Image 1 (cartoon, rainbow, N blue to C red):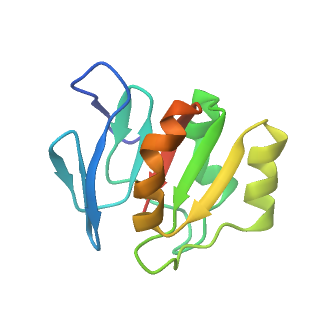
Image 2 (cartoon, helix red, strand yellow):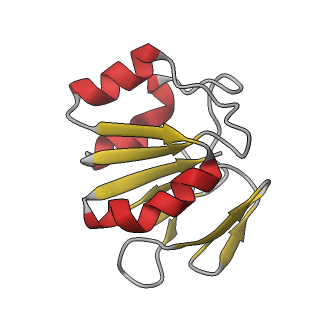
Length: 122
């Protein structure tokens, strides 16, 4: 199981910046994929299969039961979200937005106001 890092602010973690190969969350630099949940960051997150997001990759997300998931597909949108994965999230009542990671970073502030509580960045 992946280790977690609690948000320093005791509120949802804040994405400070993103660029290819690096995301900064609450002033902490990450150079590997992450899952951002309401009260913690799961660093060094790995998918089961390369650039495809499988349902099994999202255990922590399903456990958190968010209203919305923002999926950053990487700087060049190479990570794919198969229809089966997207449908499993929708079947669980979770709205899914998939875009390039730079675009998802722009959305995080607005979506946090709408109840998004899980963000995946690759």
